[in-house]
Length: 233
Image (tube, rainbow, N blue to C red; front, side):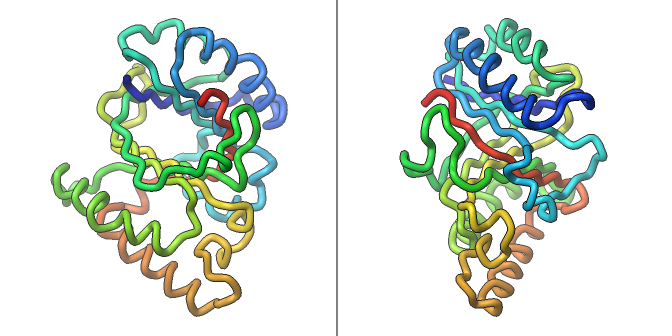
């Protein structure tokens, strides 16, 4: 099977609640009916509004959501993309290679209902100073454990972009999905699993910044908190 990711944008005249309802109630059943094997829909909605300070954007036109699904073959995706097109203002598709060093507990991904907390979606480009092999090695072999040890994540999926699937695809090299508990939405202490220890929080935040700077150019990075719905498991 292959994993496909679609970044999606909503029309300006629709609010996030109506957009969410459209994706969950209309698009999701359509995609499942087109033989997807696993389906997640993430939306930047009012439930994660308090996490707005976490947003990092290299473009004023922020992504409004993310569709991730597994299919038998990306070759037969025309009907999938036609269905997506009916519910969004535009979309960009990617075939990716997924590594999941931290798998969500089953209780944290109830099918058909909102997952706890938030899913932080990150788009990355490989720094020019690194070869592809160097970039992967630093990210996967050096950084992964730092991220797990310093943050309150309960799910972590690293998606390396293999191929752009649409003509308007943005040149991302990786798309990351990180699940955080509810307390991380409006608290850096909660984000870094530091309890009430501000010094520990600062130390963990600095450790993350130091580690990320080895393989990320922050000015070429987008980070968007979203609500996650696993619609097919």
